[in-house]
Each structure stands twice: as C-alpha cells, then as structure tokens.
Image (cartoon, rainbow, N blue to C red):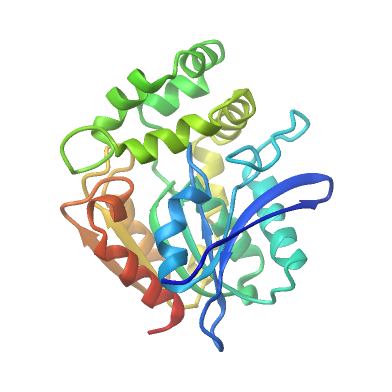
Length: 272
C-alpha cells in the first residue's frame, strides 16, 4: 500500500481539501468523487491500493461550505474542471459514486479529459428515476430542515441499517466520519443539491451519455435501497463501451460489503 497525503488549498476563493497518493506512471490519474453525506474518507482504501486523487467536494468534509454557493449539478461540474486544472492534469480516470455522479456532467462536457469511467451506484442521470423516501423529505421545505437537525448517531445508525447488505448499521468508522462533518454547511449543501435536481433535471443532465466512448465499468450493489437495480443496466446500456458488474451481496456502498471490489475498480481505472 502507498502513503496517502492530505492537502489544503484554495480554488477561486473556496477552501478545498483533498487526498492524494502516487499512481502508476503512464496512466491517467484516478479521480474519485464521493456522494452524500460522505467525503474523501470513502476512498482511503482505493488510494492506498492504486493512488490517485480524492477531493472533499464543496459543501462536504473539510472543504469550504459557503452559503453563497448554489450546490447544483452545473456548479459541481465546473468545480471538477477547476480542480484538475489547478493540479495540472490534462486527463483523469474517473470513478463516481452516489452524488459523485456530478462527474458525469463534467465527462459529457469535456469527454477528451476522461480516459476511463467507473460508475458505482450513482444517482441516475437517466429518464424515469423518482427520488426515494429520504430524498423526498430533504426536498420538502421545512421538513428537510427538520430531518437534518434531528440527525445524530442514533438516527444515523437506525437509518443506515438499510444501506448495506451486511446485517446491522453501517460500520462505526463510517458513521464517525459522517457525523464529524455533518454541520450546518453540509446540511445546507445537501438540501440545495436535492432541491435543485427534480427528475427532469437529472434526465437532462445525462442526455449525452451515449456519446461517451471511453472504456466504462458500471459496478452496482444490487441490494441498494435508494436506486432501483434497473438503473445499473440503464447506465450500462447507454454507454457505448460499458461492462456491467452486478453484486448481489452488496448495498449502496458496495465496496464495504465486498472489499474485493476495491481491487477490481482500481485495476479497471489503471487499465489492467
């Protein structure tokens, strides 16, 4: 395993935290994009195994969470471009999970900058998706704020029991990581992101996925309670050169149920 380094910088006035580890020479650097409500903590095992970059997206983790941002898909798309520009990268191999799917907007806008693409239980930028129960609560003014304000260790352990295939709540390390950064700034970012993304916006955000001709891998935990399994197949069908890997014994964070998935994804991103 390689050493993982932590960095802090600033992009257009926004404080940004990211992690990095050396990746094999000759291949595009892996870029890992986390979802809600997590951070780059998700990717430590991946970075240790194969190197790469993993930022805390704006509004999450240790990055800035200003109230002046809208936290829309388009805003995250532009942030990804600025982030890799600041690090001097022409191309990346991209892995997106959950709301890290904002990276798909970047990939469609600048496909020449993405060498390989891995999609893992990502929010569907596809027609026909309807938000699940918790998301509908977050999208409702007043109710969403109440739900955010009542999130604590007890409720997170209770609600996360459905997130993974392994019996019981998500691992305590995962819960600790979420709660460490679940402040008002992150809560605001989550609410704005969900409220700016009705189903028609999600579908429009993926309208050019069929033009992405880089090698792609769709890896999906089939016991995901938030996103129906049909969207795994839909992603694989819309991407011209995609392989579908369905994991019957894994949930929404499938690498936690199936640690062997880490190596499979890292090998794909490196071209092995």
